[in-house]
Figure: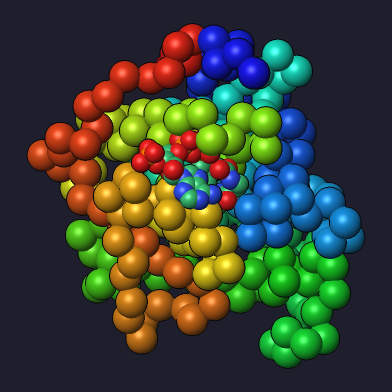
Length: 223
Ligand SMILES: CC(C)(COP(=O)(O)OP(=O)(O)OC[C@H]1O[C@@H](n2cnc3c(N)ncnc32)[C@H](O)[C@@H]1OP(=O)(O)O)[C@@H](O)C(=O)NCCC(=O)NCCS
């Protein structure tokens, strides 16, 4: 694989179908969810669409020789973003999707996403107050393991620092040990609190006064 064949650029609304495909192919705790989800677009419509729509300055697409192969998406002010989700984005999805109920043993296919549509966690509890921004990142398999994810997260943190953010948090599937190791290598630490949902792991890091953000991108990556 040639690293100089990859380029990081701002994502646009036109990228949504390709970004949704990346979301599906990384949606099973980092693995391909194509055979798991019954709605191939729903994951993307929940976890990608609102970011590109509401925070386009913090939405980046990784483009390889065959098109979009990854993204890093960020939000400066999680409280403000969550209000927009609640008022402008989720109502349409809630009308379109049935609520699968609260018993996970009865969920099939994309029901876990449908449940998140109807019962979203939209709080920013005090334990996350120092980390008001959030982000998430996904790369298709061929792009992984070459330092590209590190560069993408560093780009995101530099953007957030430039916008005045003091800290960033993110959510990781507890089964996704690889992503947890990745975030740890970037200085993120697990945050635990009874105010946070139990089925997801929150990690966070300060981004002000940062010396870990120095370090150049691998060849060919521009942002
Ligand atoms: C997690 C992910 C974003 C990491 O991006 P990447 O380009 O593969 O990671 P990098 O090559 O930049 O690695 C950066 C550091 O993280 C570590 N790391 C990355 N993936 C790792 C893994 N699976 N296991 C252990 N460590 C890992 C690397 O060892 C490296 O450490 P170093 O710089 O100290 O040597 C990418 O692998 C991915 O998209 N995976 C599938 C989707 C996913 O899990 N997304 C996160 C959802 S919360």
